[in-house]
Image (tube, rainbow, N blue to C red):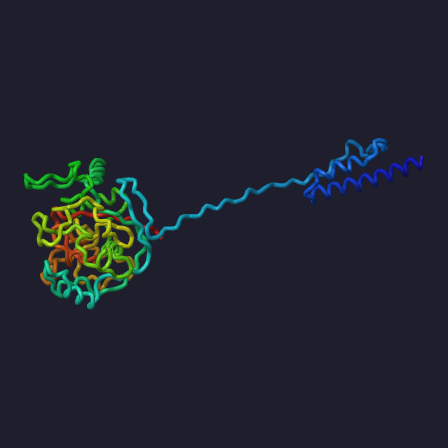
Length: 367
């Protein structure tokens, strides 16, 4: 009895060691499938069969449970920068991104002296006093914003009218002049003959607002202090201005032919793009601005996000524009290429409607 028992213990112990070894190899070897058959083949077919004496009611040892954590997939958040754009839902307008930061607003004395000596005043004589409202040149910090790549078109404006959020533009009184608004031929031309309030209503409907003077000027000139959206070269063919074909312009340059007697389809001068890819910021049509205009505002303008005067400036005969008005920017098709088309140029929008006056919108980005 004792000899059988001893044999049992020896075989059991040998089997345990062999089992542990196989387990160890199977975990640590890369060639496990070829090893296990050889071990099995070495066993004698007449080996004593061992019967476990562990009661069937014994609690089995717990097996380890592994929870596989899936590999995390990181999706990079797209960063916004110069050249970023998106298409607005309301009217399918493409908007361009203008990053936050400083820029130089207005003109320095040296720049004014250079302008007075240049050809920019040949068609529309300039005086140094004419630039007083563009001084002093000063640094302005703006939060990031989106701005319309082009002026709002007739087709876009018609969507707001159809939604009953905007009043339709006025009509030309000259019976021989074709009506632009509502005419398919002019769908892609800037909408004109609207008031400042109509432009404001449209921007609100589209989810934005009219730009401030500071926003407009930064979008037009960038941060390098350029004089025109495209740089400092005085090239009249990079904008729609009053050339030899111009109809009824205030001044003409007969040495230029840009191909358009009045307004042009938006985006017709891509070579005149600003540093942020914004088009038509010189010529074509003047653009409404949200600010009330004040000649000497730059002397008191805050450094960060200036919005201009919040109330109309009382009538003052000593001002360049003696009556309350909102600022205009960008020059227009009915003026010969020159000082009015500078990115710094400021003008005054009256209470009427004009065939040379349109607008674009901005959307502020909350920081």
